[in-house]
Image (cartoon, rainbow, N blue to C red; front, side):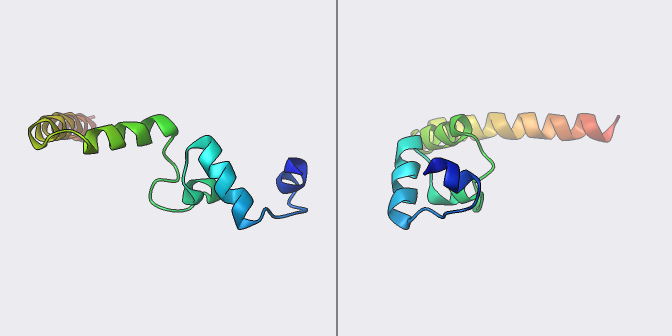
Length: 80
């Protein structure tokens, strides 16, 4: 059956798509290659989820650090 999906000779039902998404712990959008986070790998998505569960103080610390790294990277690229 999976070979048929890969060769595009058959399309999975929505029930099968949901089961596949649950097995791989991804969204249906991710499976379809659509949506905001479809290009992110599972590790990045897990980090985003972990950060969203932090306290507000710790989130601010993480975001300040990320902002600093992004700013420095943009500055370095501007002077190359």
